[in-house]
Image (cartoon, rainbow, N blue to C red; front, side):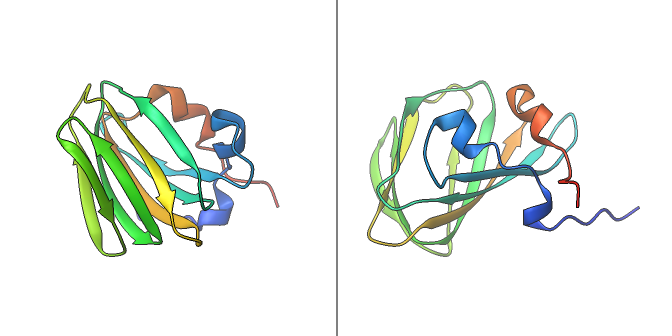
Length: 122
């Protein structure tokens, strides 16, 4: 069975979770093994260095971001994929004057995001 969800149908947990005004973070789909999350991050937003036991693979859709990982800092733009290993210390900062849009996949699914997988009631 094909499941379809528009971004705006997924509940926004961004502002609440990270205390950042205008941040959109939406769980699009998940299984026990995989979770896909859409983010729209305001200019200048910085995520502090953190780690989690999940592998994280992402794709930069638009905007520019400086990624920090255990092997350095990298500025990325649209069309760039990135990956953080499980338990790798990492963080990021949006650079430039436009929001950054990213699509992240986590393996296994992040249990701390599971309550976000709700469709907005119309």
